[in-house]
Length: 148
Image 1 (cartoon, helix red, strand yellow):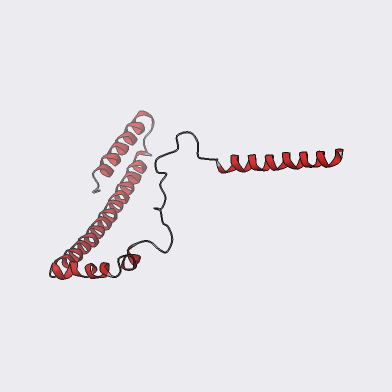
Image 2 (cartoon, helix red, strand yellow):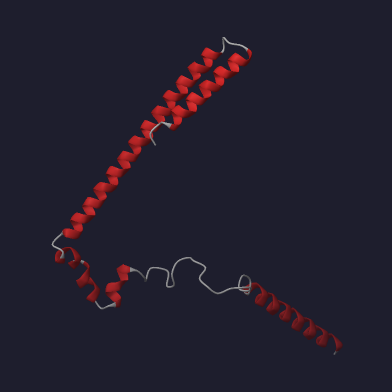
């Protein structure tokens, strides 16, 4: 009779330990200043949310309003979208040209600096140091003058 009581007591302790670990494990990350949104996708994730489902949710009434924006404005909203798209593409092209011009200008400045430093090699001492300082200053001014 002594053995069954020990067995039941041990089983009870094991179940208590498992339940305690379960509570501790499920509470991780929920303490100390919880509250507030943590970001992430909105509630109701999955297939059944978003504009594609609105027709089902409103029994077809949502479909009526979707295509009418362009009709009511007589195409003005479509034309505005097209103008905005064209302006965006042009801005990208201009920015690309500016980057290309900047890189070309910096390469030319680097080439001139290299030649100026080569010209300083024939000199010695303080004269050479002054020549190199002047070449470095000219290079700095050249790069700063390049279009951005």
